[in-house]
Length: 480
Image 1 (cartoon, rainbow, N blue to C red):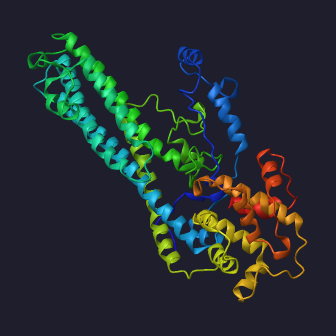
Image 2: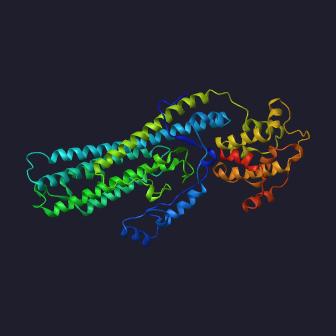
């Protein structure tokens, strides 16, 4: 396999995908008085000494999950993970999320492209010969920008609803709702050109908007200053709404990507690792960046800023398209693999040997591809002799002098408890009796235990003690 074109995107280790790391919004998650002081100082900041409270919190969180993050090139995944089921799951996930993020970046790219077109057309219209005065040219430009931007918003509402239906979307409906509410308030407070009435009533059937009379739209800004003042404010407001809407849409990426410098994983769904240089260009307010790290577009014209951002969006789409194409190829290869021996086959053998024991909840727990992968890896790494016996058709649980492994067994219990804590959705409730049975499935007949209370109590009290080898063996399985 090989990339159709180079991609800087890598795949985050599964163990870190399960680790929540949610940062505060550096603009809104601060006290009101602190926000007022920032606004008074025009947001001036130069370094750690001027971090606001949200940045200070984020700085501490960044230290806890500092680089290097365990991540892999796509080509490494077949070698890193063991089971066919997990490989198919992982490649399918990469393809699905990549395609969704491409749709998001393409939608934002189209918005930027349309905005650039609108700006160019407005400039062309105001340079027409019949508009001889500066006042007439400016008045015509503002009217055109309002009409064109509202048409763009209508298209955005439609495209956002399409994205909302994707299974990978997270809160896109809130982006649409927020944008529509901001538009509704703008239309209700200020006058807008009467030529957009039909389109406004299509988006807001019951709105009581203020439309300027056609006669009031013919003169220059000096002839109808009140109307022009309203139009100017509406144009500014529309531009702000557009920026916020695109930024909120691009926040979809913040749920799935993290920089290589620290872990950003607000919802436990992050799977991609990108260079910090690329991550900064997204300008996430809640992505763990400091204000000094966010790209500053001050000094650029609206059209110039849109062009620069569109170029970035094109590169994002190309990178994820390259990753998706290779993941599709890898997925096809993974589906052709033979079904290997793993935890599910081991559970079948156990049920045959102990037909009266209920293992249905354990089997449901192992239905998760990630859980099955980690239990299988543990089985091969810690109980390889049991696997060898099972594959040879012998009794894996027959004691053969291998019973004295108390240290390993203690570590295994902690591993199993941690695994369940990370995948609570697998079962609504996992009683201690089931945890005991799960442990005994990996134990020889001479090692069967009858009580798990002490282990569970110590685990929940954070007083559980593991051996020096735990991280090297079990910890490594959880992190991968």
